[in-house]
Length: 156
Image (cartoon, rainbow, N blue to C red; front, side):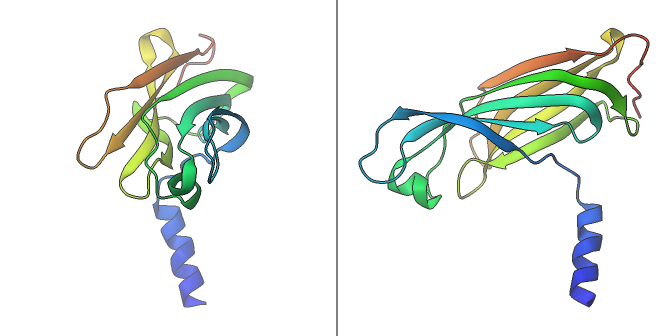
């Protein structure tokens, strides 16, 4: 009981990041043993902005190491965020906040998506990039979702 309560409290203290679901994938290179190299497309809903979903495509390494989760995926990723319903804000947003993170290797490499608020244009900007403890990558991609002027983006 005490452990369950501790885990529940820890969950409340950690930032809420979106969880992605796989839309589909395509093979890019055949591997004789293990899964093929792929480009995977995933989607997640912005956890603090109702009505906005982001589609992420990224490389996934195959072969034996990739199948066992020991390979390091390349830094290639792209993001496209779109309004998919009526936009609503549950709470004021930070000017810049990480909304998605997913491991790209067994150790220390992640694909990250950061939401930025462009207040003067009333637009949500999403940046995808990868980082690594020692040597990250400058490869990145950006997309933007304009919000109607009648609904100002609340920023804290």
